[in-house]
Length: 85
Image 1 (cartoon, rainbow, N blue to C red):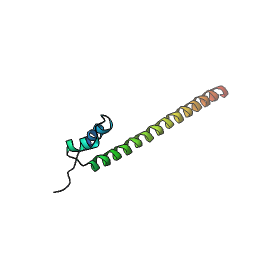
Image 2: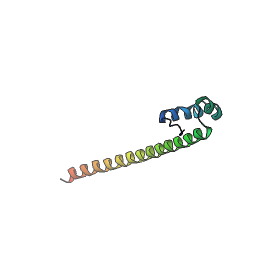
Image 3: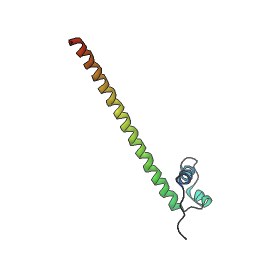
Image 4: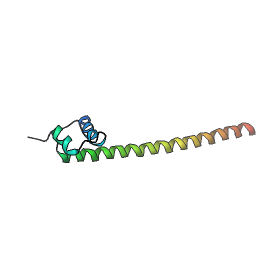
């Protein structure tokens, strides 16, 4: 018999029981019929996804600041062009 495939939603819910609700890994493992090793692996995988999201958020903030700066420079140049025209 092969290893069972669990949906991503099932994995997220299982990890949420540990991280958000505070249930012990052993209890969640027994209740869901999943090995503790699998729960720890899912927890690591989800942590990587979350940290990836954080770096994307930081990049978005940086790009917004750069856009604001470039927009301000453009507006200044438009005013200067109108002044000298």
